[in-house]
Length: 446
Image (cartoon, rainbow, N blue to C red; front, side):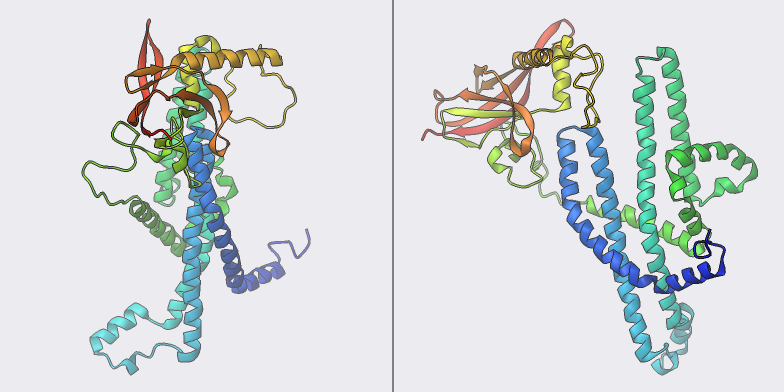
């Protein structure tokens, strides 16, 4: 290893000391570019999060939610860093002009002079504190993102244990239930112990007999939380009193911000603008001409407008995983032995579907049965008139997959009408019909 790369060599330590003195310039440059990029990325991330939630794609939703939270943390911390660094630069300029604080020239009473000297001490100390806050805050921004990722990994571990062990088809049911429950209890207990150790800044590691019990948990969770990637950063904070205080100080600030951003003013005891469409309320998510913003996504059923002037009514029902579950419940023969939903790669080595369905003809045949089942289970009612038209598969607004049909309304009277999407559902040995969506619309002939 060369002298320039040897962290024990005096020249390398001298280089680091020199870089420390000049790091504020790099911090401001990186913060500026990062804030611009984060502001640009935040809105697309928020839209993708809403889209994934709307389409009930839990994997995409979790990924984009983590990215959105990380983006928010970085934005807040970097903006605060730039403000404090600007205050630091301004303080340096003021020190050049005015020097240190001369309390005697202020001619305050002895009580105030003594109090201010005790609280402020000196202007140089104030500048030094600002420098410390700026340097630590810049580093802690990325550490907090790792903490968000760690929490996500723990939750993901619980989900994976539940899915691949407790609900496994390959393990004995009793063994899978007991072993899976033990693992989940271990993960939850370890999560609380790790969090307690974090809040107390290593109390479990300090007590000799407790540390022996906690060490196996700590070792496992160092992999679950990916802490081996950022462990040096954590302990460099914890061995410094200033760093410990700042970490604990930021936690209530984030909680306060979360509380403030969740506040909303309620102007009515009964009326809300975010509710499902009904005979008395029309939600914009159900009308195509009102979906004008990038983050507007269709609801459970969409028609062109509140006012229809054509003799036909276009109806679009977006596809979702929950909708497919309903199709499987109605026609159990469609339920595959191996569920292919979830994350998959776009790289295809084979065109097979990993089970008995292999040829294009078989796939097409299954899709026809799928669509037939959907049409059997779904129908419409306009006011008191039952209407039954066949859906076809298509892509609608924002290239969203769904089912589409056109209803003949030429015989309807002009005025307000209620369109209901009705669905047949099997309950034990009976088939019942329920109303999924109710939309008001007005029909006026051209």
